[in-house]
Image (cartoon, rainbow, N blue to C red):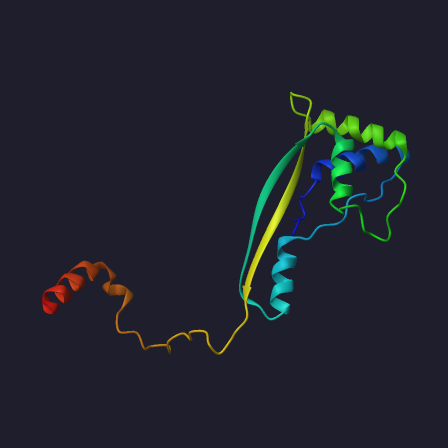
Length: 159
């Protein structure tokens, strides 16, 4: 699933352009989740031993319009109900210029950052191994310094 820092370059460029041209801004990129929200969601669903990992992938595009066309093709158009459905042409042109100026590469391409979350969780089941009872250990952590001696002694006893 996409994480909260996904497409930060595009979101920032659109916000700056709309603030400058229209005096306010509307979100034009769908909201993404934060990592702590995923952990809370998995926990409330009954999962335990949660792991959430993330990767950042940067994809380079010739320009902002090509990026937006790809997003539309991915089905990643903004799904928020409270959004403004129209992005004025002059705001879009300004956003493309801001994007290029702030984030553009030397070869003229622009980066688009995608943060991807991977989630793993387990639900308790009777077939899972259970932890040993407290105090049932047969060795002490204090004996760890003598592990080599204990292993050598047990090998001699076996032969």
